[in-house]
Image (tube, rainbow, N blue to C red; front, side, top):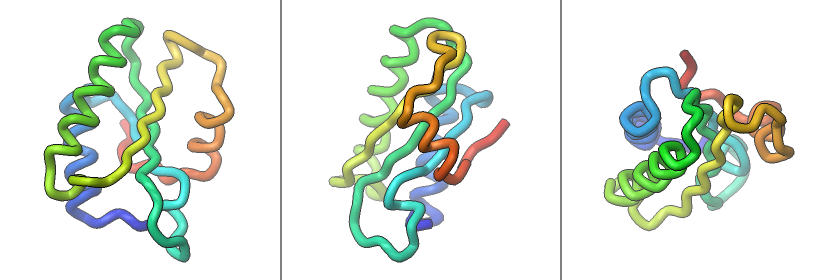
Length: 107
């Protein structure tokens, strides 16, 4: 996994701050491949909330928070949301994150 300890800690803390302690987090895409180079940070956050406005506001706040840190300054970060209470059917990108990603935060 190509994620430093500081990036891991920063990402984990930010997800918990914006989505709560029940949120789960996966890293997927090229950053889970130790042999790859470069690439953006693809993460998926599972949240239990049923309020779409709240969830998307938290996503924007998470991205702003991460980009304000030295660990993620200038990095490309893609955040996929998985909210089973809002949309119980998994989309292909969510299935890929679950199948090939690494869970960084679990309940």
